[in-house]
Every structure is written in C-alpha cells, then in structure tokens.
Image (tube, rainbow, N blue to C red):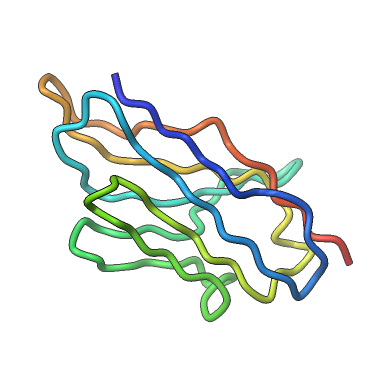
Length: 119
C-alpha cells in the first residue's frame, strides 16, 4: 500500500502565504507525477498544480505567478508554496502521487488539508 499524507494547511489573511507539504510512503517503487487539486464548497475538484519526476510543472491559470510547486525526489515529497493568497483560494487541497508499486501503477490520494483565506 501507498500512503499519501499532507500537512501545512490553515487560516491566513488575504495576501498572506502558506506552504503545503505532501509525502508518499509505503510500497513505492517509483513516482511519476505528483500534484495538488482543490475543492471549494459547491464546486468541482480542480487541478491546482502538478510536477513530473523530471521537474516539469503545470499550473492552473488562476494560480500562475502566485503558487510554486516543487518536489524532493529523495524524500518522495511535493510542496506547494502559496503566496498572495486570495479568499477564492479557500478550499480543501488534496495531494496526489502517481506511484508504481510491485503490482500496479495508479494515483494515490491524501486525505486533504483545509486552506482558508480570510478577507
């Protein structure tokens, strides 16, 4: 089994910053893409940012220039630095890791971490 655990959410004022972390562990042979989705109340889950094992990144238009995704392959960890936060960034943020085990390759998801931005 693969476990994906997020940390770093919380409450912040508009214009502030937060850093999310996400670590994959367990029966991981190798990791492909890792990234973050978010889901606000009453809205569909949307991709925020992703990063390949080689470091190529992809961002939602709404966060470009404000959020930065990075990863530490040695630690199987991905980070999301969020700056200039806006109230509309309020959501539950979910980390995923596309992982190879000995028997399968699929996305594994964390439990989610709440980010609340007050105006």
